[in-house]
Image (tube, rainbow, N blue to C red; front, side):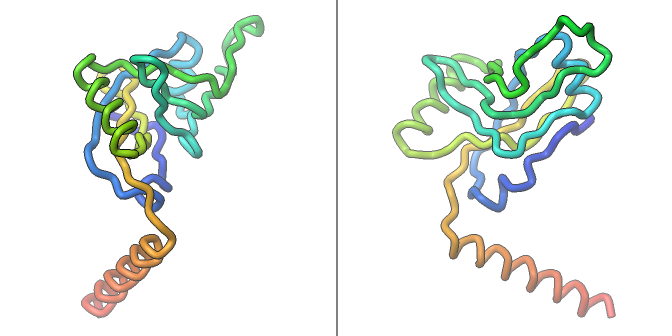
Length: 147
């Protein structure tokens, strides 16, 4: 499994609970672009359209060696491939409980491109400060133990 992109802000902005793995429905040029590492999850999120889940606002630029006539929209919504039962439970969690579906990373599994996303609850500003304090305290303890 080769990790192609990571959403670094996900664990800072959200309290992540359940993690899921989904396939991404991409075109041929998009697959080539993603496998060369040209994808950004910054500011992206998973949305519900009818009975489907879509990765929205992720940037996949045009593959540089593709034919000039082949064009795609860089930030178009891309369908996530999941089982119907998983989709139903995720739709229920996002609508009823008010939770958010946050993309965490994109990676390859064998020859397929997969997306790992989690069900998350947004953190408040004081929660973020608490996370920073905890991280700095553990860093200070490691430094003290090292010396």
